[in-house]
Length: 336
Picture 1 (cartoon, helix red, strand yellow):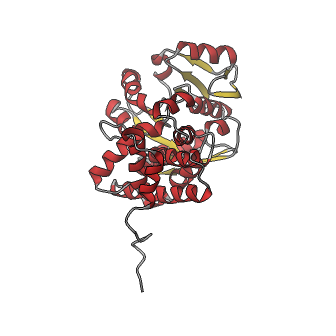
Picture 2 (spheres, one colour; picture 1 turned 30 degrees about the horizontal axis):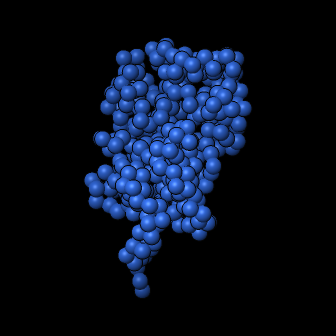
Picture 3 (cartoon, one colour; picture 1 turned 180 degrees about the vertical axis):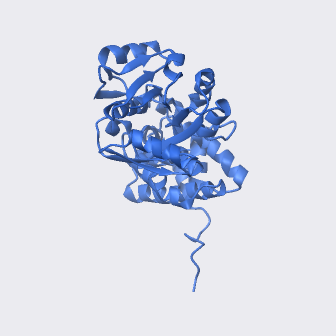
């Protein structure tokens, strides 16, 4: 049995708390919001973000970060990506040398273009940082619906340790050393999901969705390879797998926000309506910064940025994509 704290009591953090408790671990959930912790303690359910998923009576809840962090075997960092740096900075004094932190959020920091694990390593250099990602909606994991994900870590022993902690009959865990590839796929699929949602909001069909998913993973892989990721990662669970589920499911806050934008909402109105952090909005600008840094083309993500931040009408963005210069689908396949 491991002593584990979940740092962040949103839908994903709560679902993982239930999973880890079911696996026999001692679990503490932390939130900065006192009202949220009082609700979890009293109701034994996250009424707002994960309704219907009951929390065990012996699960502990706290707003005291030192209590949550100090001397735990594993820390699962589940705060929304915009708060990864500030939360990591606050955690640093209580993290011991070699303590394992598993980042489960998805995003890229706009100002620095760092992935979330790089932010954690910068703020808490004494920690050993791993990531957990894949096609895994909290609403389904909380209910025990079969799910498959990937743990990424620099050390194989750390990945195997976390694999044993998280894995059960409904939650299959693979391991990988490609942390950069895992994190880039996790962050950029949210931007492509915004595009998929916009297409849905415009009333487009399955053909459009398939095109966005297929060409979207091409963009993600193109940038990922330039940044040192592995092509195998982008064809796996944290690449095409996560992209499919995020573009297709109404559980996806990024797709839901995109649908609203396609129907005429502004970015701010869509985010207010979804009532959750739409992480693709925060990663979109960062993706273009990375594209410029590594000199790669990201046409779908570029048009998403133009809609979100440049005031471009959504139908014009679609035309820009459809009328781009003629291309070969895969230039690596030679003509005879």
